[in-house]
Image (cartoon, rainbow, N blue to C red; front, side, top):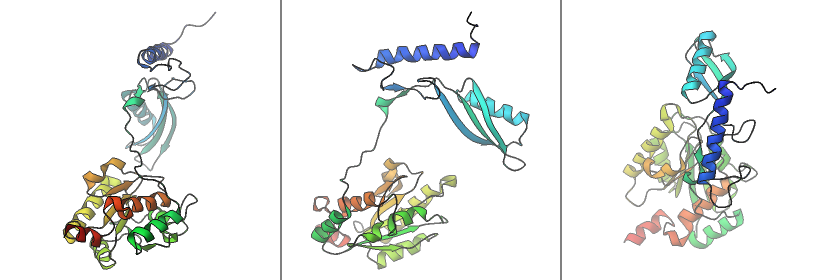
Length: 294
């Protein structure tokens, strides 16, 4: 004889049934099978569509039973039902780190997901150098740095240094690029002055420190400083990268391009050709831009 299901099991069963009904209603032609990916999806843990997720967080409470109860209460308010506390560890005398595992009933509509597609072709190092030689007829000057209090140079070094990242050589490897890596904790006025002295075509800034939106404040301050120091139309191409930037927020931050986590040197080099070298863009160099307005 099959034992009666608990209230939690009944809740999950009803949720799965509702999920299946919604999938049948909203699925596109040919996507009525739950074994095939469709427009509506749920998290996956043990079985397809079970809605199981795992989250981690820290509470400002010493590690005890009360803190564990508070963690489960928070999980319930986040929509996890039932929630299982799988890990709790004291982080000093006044904080506790938690990992909670549980089921959620939320659905994700894949049709509503917006993705920023790459608008330029990925080029080899040879093609990048050839394009710069043909159209720019001089070396393209790149200045890179970590600004403010940010001392994490791994990102900027991965893009600029010749050793590169993910099997790709950095921008220093490209014969037609002149690269100046200023390192960490560079003051914005110093970055602006160096870019002016070197006649930089592009300025690359890496921001890893994100506490209290430090990366956002530093980026907007840098953008404002460049636009104040350079005549209109002669500001170097401003590029910012880091794991916590939203790729579609370049305009709001006053920069020309944002690269997120996982960006490779080849992507950046290809973008520089697309934005600054390709004649169709009319952005060959600050000098060319100025002549074009005359």
